[in-house]
Image 1 (cartoon, helix red, strand yellow):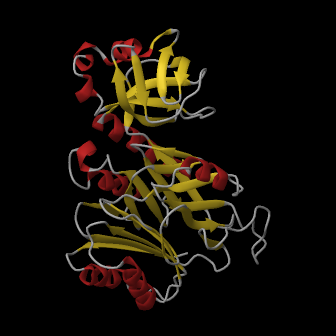
Image 2 (cartoon, helix red, strand yellow):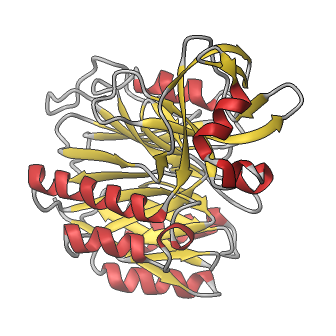
Image 3 (cartoon, helix red, strand yellow):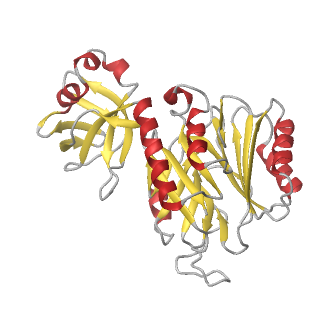
Length: 366
C-alpha cells in the first residue's frame, strides 16, 4: 500500500491545490482521498473537491472543513490552507457512507472474504443535537467498535465530504478487517483533584459531590487562587468524566458552563447522573506534551513505522497549548518519521464510541 500526503497554504485555493498536487505526484493508483479545507479558504468546496477528483482520478473522497488543517510537521490555523492524503487501499475493502449512502451492514463480507465493517473514520456536524448517540450507534455497526475522527469546525458554515459536500449528521469511510490500522488517544488536560461521586444532580447541574455542595468541592480542588476568580478559572479548568472500563484512564473533558454561588451549584457541558464519577482538570501544555510523547512511544514500540496516518486535534490545542506553531505536529514527525499525515482542528474529537474534547486522536495505517 502506498500513501501520499501534501499540504499548502495560499490565498487562492487553486494555488494551494496546485502545490498539493505537485507534491503528491503520480496518484493514478490511489483509490481513496482525505481532503481537509480551512474555513478561511475562499471558494466553493464542491468545486475544490471536483478539482481534486479530476486532477487525481481518485473517485472516492472524505473530509471536512476546520478552523485549521494539519499535515506532516505542520499546522495551519486561521489561514487559508489545504491538507490532503491519498492511499491505494484495495478496491472493495472500504466504503464511503453518509445519510445518502449506507455503510456495510455488520457481518457482511468483501469480495476478498474480509469482514466489510471493521473500523471507520468519521466526520460529524457539530450542530447535530444527537451527535453522541449517532457516534455510539455507528460504533456498534463496526466489528472493532472503533471510530476515529472529529466534528467539523468553522467560523462560518460547516460541512463534511463523503463523495460530495454534505451538511448535518455523521459521514465517513468504513474499512474492512483487511486494512491494518492502529489508533491512540492523547489527553490535553491533567487532573487537579481526586475522583468524586455525583450524589445529586439535575441534567447538567452538579448539586452535591460526595454528599457535599458541588461548588464547595470544586473550589477546594482548584485551590484558593483560582477559586478567587471563577470567571477566569472557567477558561482553563474543566470537568472530567472518567470513561468506564478504560484501561488507560481516559476521561471526557467538558467545559464548566456556570456557577451559582448562592446555591453552591456547578453547571457543566454534559448531562450527568447520580452515582456517576467526576473530577476536575486543567488545560496544561506541559502535561499535554508529556502525554503525546508517551502515546507515540507506546504505539511505535508496539507497531513500528507506519505507512501513513490521520490526526485529529482539538481546536484548543496547537500553538495555544504547545506554545509554538506546528510544535504538536513536529512531535508526531519526530516520533513517527517523515510519514504522510493529514487531519484538521476539530470542534470535538471522536475515538472509539465517544466524543472527546481537548484531545488528539491518531490513526496509523500499516
